[in-house]
Image 1 (tube, one colour):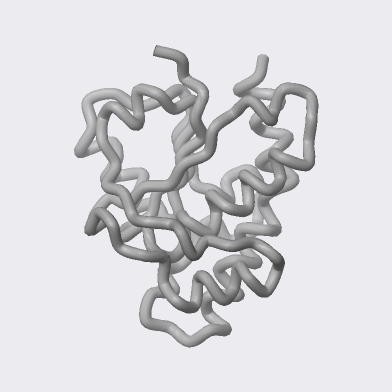
Image 2: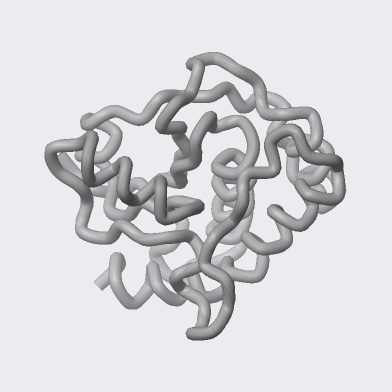
Length: 159
């Protein structure tokens, strides 16, 4: 089975990971050089399959021209991991849960913000239940990491 998918993982797959999925997908569309062949997905470690993206996540993404209204949450499975070349979590707790729950993981398992230089916060706190501004902050912390994530993918996955 070919490992051709980048997966974003959060808790419920209704806030952070759908935003990250849309952001990376949009960035990959703009880049050539082999990046466009990668698939991007998001899943939750405690997802209720079929839940829509949260209202504030949808609004935060619409504000920058991306539409996640059709997103439906999915629970992460071993089969998903077997197809992935990298998994990006939002908090250390997500990475711990991956290690505890799954038999095998892809070659690259890290926090979304681990691609940033030393000295910056690595976590993306859960905005669930927060006001719109909290969702914007969550989105913006992901946007900050996208350029370095593309470089990480080029150096570590497409080689």
